[in-house]
Image (tube, rainbow, N blue to C red; front, top):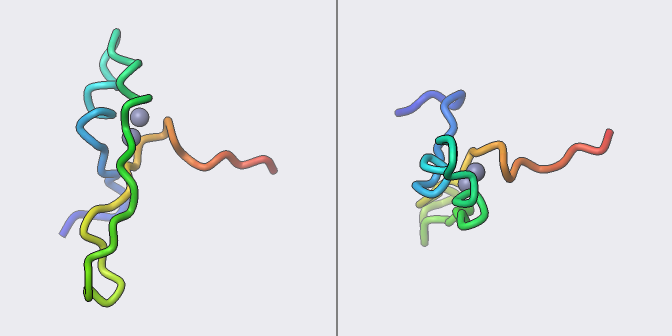
Length: 58
Ligand SMILES: [Zn+2]
Ligand SMILES: [Zn+2]
């Protein structure tokens, strides 16, 4: 079990965090994938990278 505070980044965004690889953030399309018959469990969590954090227009 990982702590919720630790965001899981896709492979693209992990590389994209390195200097010079920022373009890879655009290639990331990791989203929530529900586990079939998983009762709400997720097979894959959406990428936690800040590059696609929901915009907060508050
Ligand atoms: Zn990213
Ligand atoms: Zn990402």
